[in-house]
Amino acid sequence: MATAEHFENLILGSGQGGKLLAWHLARAGQRTAVVEKRWIGGSCPNVACMPSKNEVWSARVAHLVKRGAEFGAMTGPVTVDMAKVRLRKRAMVAHEIALHLQNYEQSGAQLIMGSGRLIAEKTLEVRQKDESTRLLTGDRIFLNVGTHAAIPNVPGLEAARPLTHIEALDLDYAPSHLIVSGGGYVGLEMAQAYRRFGSRVTVIEAGPQIVGREDSDIADALQQILSDEGIQFVLGAESIRVSGKSGREVSIVVRTPSGDQTIDGSDILVAIGRVPNTAGIGLEDAGVELDANGYIRTNERLETTAPGVWAIGESAGSPQFTHVSVDDFRIIKDNLAGGARNTGDRLIPACVFTDPPFARVGLSEGDAKRQRLSVRVAVLPMSAVLRTAATDETQGFMKILVDRSDLIVGFAMVGSDAGEVVAAVQTAMLAKLPYPKLRDAVITHLTMAEGLGPLLGKVPSYQSASRKADHDSSEISL
Image (cartoon, rainbow, N blue to C red; front, side, top):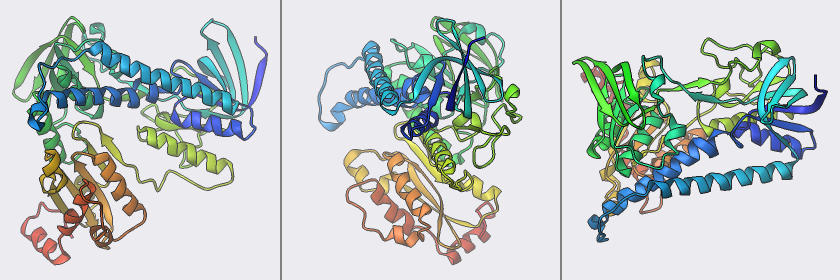
C-alpha cells in the first residue's frame, strides 16, 4: 500500500465552493489538496453555467441578426455555423481552465487529478489517470462532489444514448428535430437556443406546466414566448418507451391525457433533474450519512455526521446554483475562523436564462398560499416599462408580493434584464426596506429597473386588497 501523504485540508471535488475554499486555506499557509476526477474548476466553467450561457448568447445573436430588418439593419440570408459556435465556447472554457490552474499555482493548493474514494475516517484513496494510486489523509475533509444529470428508467432510453446538457453543449451541428425531455431551467434554455440555431424543437414535460415549481402565470408567459418562436410543447406526458439512436433517428412514445402519442426526432436531450454524486465514494466507510435522496446529510453549518467533515454545494442538498456554492464556501470559511454563520437565513435568487429571462427571489404566490401568509400582489406588464418602447422587448411582466408590514417578501419577473432587476429587489429585501422606499427611489431613466416604481405604485392598500379578497376567495387572504 502507498505511503500516506498528510494534509491539513483535503477537498474532494473542485467545484465552485471547494476551489474557493482550497485557495483561501492554502493562501493562509495551510497544506491543502483538491482531488478532481475530470473537470478542473468543476462543472460551472466546463459543462454547465458558463458554456450554456455562452451558447445561449450565440443563439441570441443569431436571433437578432435574423430580425435585423425590424431595426433597420438590412442583411441577406442568415445561417449558423455550429462549428464556430462550439469553437467560441471551447475557447472560453480553455481560458477559464488556464485561470484556474494559475490560481492553484499562486495559492499553493495542490490539484490532484484522479478518482477519490474514502476508505477510512479522513483517509482518501486516489486512483490517478495513469492507474497509480495515492493515499491521502487530512485533518479536515470537505466533500464537494456535485451532481449529474438523471436518466429516467424508460425502456429504450439508455440504449438510445440520449444527450445530457454536457453533450448538447458540444454539438457541432443543429439537430433537425431536437426532442427535449424536461421543461425545467436547463431544458428550456437549451430548447430556445437550438430553436434559434435552426432546429425544430419539441419539449416534453411530465407535469401539467413547464417550470413546475413556479406560479402558473409565470409558466404560461414563458411557454407563450417560446411557442411564438416555434417550439412545440407536450404537457402532462409520461414517457413510455424510446427507440432508435439519438443523433440519427429517435422516437419516443408518451402517454398524455388525450391518449398516446409518438414523437419522432433526430436527437433527444434529457433534462429532468439531477442525481448527487455520492454513490461509490466510500462515504459509509467514513461515517458520513446520506438522506433518503442520496444527498449528504448536513446541519445548518454544513457539517456532516462525521467529525471534521463538511459538505459543500449540490451534493450537500444546497440549492443547485453556483452562487449558493459560493455562499457555502463563505459559511465554512467564516466558521473555521470562529464565526457562527449558517444556511438558515439565506435569501436565494434564481434565474432562467431564456430570452427574455425569468428571475425570482423570495416567495411565489403559491408559496404564500401554502404558508397562509397575508400578502398584497401587484403586477406590471413589461410593455408598461418605458425602456421597452425603445427596445421592443415588451414580452413578460413583473410581479411583487408585499406583507402586512410593508416588506417585500417575493418578486418575479419575466422580461429583459430580469436577472439584473431581481438583484435590486433582493437588496431591498435584505435591508428590510419598506416597499414605499423602493417605490419612491430615483431610478435611472431609461432602464428596466425603472419599472419597479410603477410596479410598487400598484401595490393595493389593505382596504382595497381586503375587499378584493372578500369578493374573490381565490385571492391570497389578508
